[in-house]
Amino acid sequence: MVKVSNLSSLRWDWKLEQGVASPFNFVVLLVVLFSFPFVLSLSGALSFSTMDVANSLYEHAFYKFCATVGIFLWICFFIALIGILRRKRVTILQFIGVRLSSVGAIARNIGVSFLALAAMAVVGNLSNAVLSRFQLDSTAFRAMTAHNSGEALAFLFLALSAGFVEEFVFRGYIQKQCQALCGSAWLASILQLAIFTQGHIYQGWTRLIPVVLIGAILTAVALWRKTLAPGMLAHGFGDGMVAFSFFLKHL
Image 1 (tube, rainbow, N blue to C red):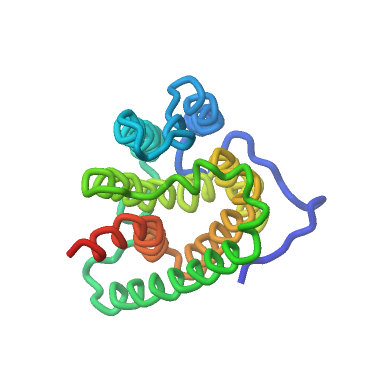
Image 2: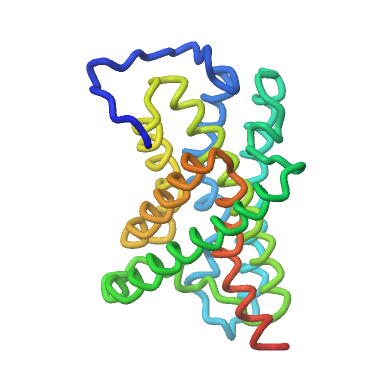
């Protein structure tokens, strides 16, 4: 259980003595993450969302979106990875919380990932049912549909990248760095969720409600199991449903 502390009792450690990376590395990553809306705007990566599917430029624009977001995610991953490796406080397997020698732990993680995926599906379906009439600003989200095998593969690359990288960066790196900063797991979770959520503003303000809820589920799983593996599996598979459903329909 995450202990709730009084704000007045928090001890802020701006040097991140217990962090997994240096303060400089943390600041660099935060600057890059908060630049994401500008990257999307300057690159024109969201142009596909306002195009008709019949437009000859649509497929190229869709690939551009997947490539832009995918590359951005992996840049964030490598910034975090470099920080962790340079600090030498934990190995990458320890950071993720993977124990390859324990078959039981692997099986439990897979089971937890299915539970997390089920909870995410409930949140997603309820959100679509309740919020669909208000999603007037969610053109980018509604346009995320594969129309051919090439688009499905491009989206699958993006989904699997998001599943691995976002859990590594947000539920892993940022959660640990924020906890080292304030000494509180629950406040670190709130800060981490806020940073995670702002990266999804391009999907529309209404979509931020399920984003927060799904992020909270993945955070709870990571804190409960003390591993990022179940969240990575659930997140990757959940985001990849667009591609998986396309391939199932065209078997």
